[in-house]
Amino acid sequence: DADVTQTPRNRITKTGKRIMLECSQTKGHDRMYWYRQDPGLGLRLIYYSFDVKDINKGEISDGYSVSRQAQAKFSLSLESAIPNQTALYFCATREGGTGGAEGYTFGSGTRLTVV
Amino acid sequence: EDQVTQSPEALRLQEGESSSLNCSYTVSGLRGLFWYRQDPGKGPEFLFTLYSAGEEKEKERLKATLTKKESFLHITAPKPEDSATYLCAVAPAAGNKLTFGGGTRVLVKP
Image (cartoon, rainbow over all chains, first blue to last red):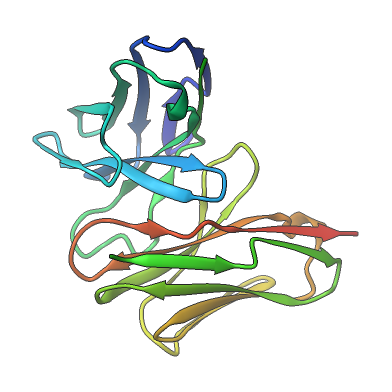
């Protein structure tokens, strides 16, 4: 099994629909992140969480919300999807504190299309 | 604001033709600079972390170097399996945000 699992892998949804992307990890890491990737723009941070009770906005949080259900689970919701939210979404984890020398561990991504 | 710029955007190489990718950055105190490899339809895969100017890391045909303003990823005698997008990212000394560059798409032709 992958260290970081994202579901679904692909999703097509209509404008205005609510959609949830899920992420689970077996790394035992405290820190979890949601990123969005658009062609030529690199990855941009949407939300991040250091533990179940600690949720923080990233640089592009508008139109998104998150829930940290457990240390291992972090879900991203689009309350009312719009076409410019069409992108590749990645969940990532990192060891907290002074660790994390290996960097972040990413899931395989969810390709979301909003029509 | 932290910034990362990667060049070139795309690179076409013949098998065996060595080359370098550039990552220029500005950050308010560098905690670490990361290189990732990303294959189509997959998430970024960690390659290296560099912490201070002068540091070098190697893995097979890849070698990453770091100065105070930029990092280079050298690909020596590349093979077709080295074809991928290579991403650079920086983490500031304070704060928790990882800033990514736009990536360099590398295609190695046999």
